[in-house]
Length: 316
Image (cartoon, rainbow, N blue to C red):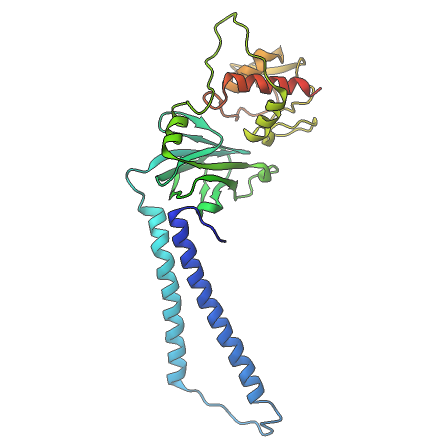
């Protein structure tokens, strides 16, 4: 409830505290009057009951004050609501947010993709939110922004983060069995650092090695970290249980049937297949699963893919 890290979030907090204060004041007045009249008009003090007649001016005053208070709270909330929904700055950075079971992906104007929302501090950001399958809901509590992701439509919301740091990003709409695993992070950084990241300087985006050249050895430990941070955990288990995608446990070196260009064929799961599955996942889809995995080209570097391969190899 405290510590909003966006400009609009601080305004929303202010309205929240004002409305809460009004509610607390009314609650206190009502409880006080209830106790006062309970003691004042006890049977001991008033053994002979008498009729109480209405008092029109008092009743109309109470009704008028109630309407005025409700309209005041509506007015305070409507101003910020209209700002969030309609008054999007023209110079806002446009980021496309796509939700699908059970991972968020973010696309920037230059085509860069990420599973983590990276934004510059003190710069308005417009989120264009959509879904590839079912209802999801984009929610960053620290920014005080929440917007449903609806299949077949694009919804927009904006914010200006005013404090650098890393904040939780959730799906706030139940979207299936692994809804609770649809987690990500919103990282607010300086504009220079953000521009560097956007241009690829902040990540070691290694170019694919030329044909025949040896590839760098991956790190299984780093692969395990990527498995969690990049959202693989939402669709692929490591204990053999079936999720939206095949389990990674013991899968390396096995033969599976895949659908390629509408035809089924049998292949061996090796380094080449895993790398292809990351970059062009819908080219060869394991039979029994849906082709809904988003391409990781531009999200995972070649070294990170190698680390994931080593991690999958270790899951015997």
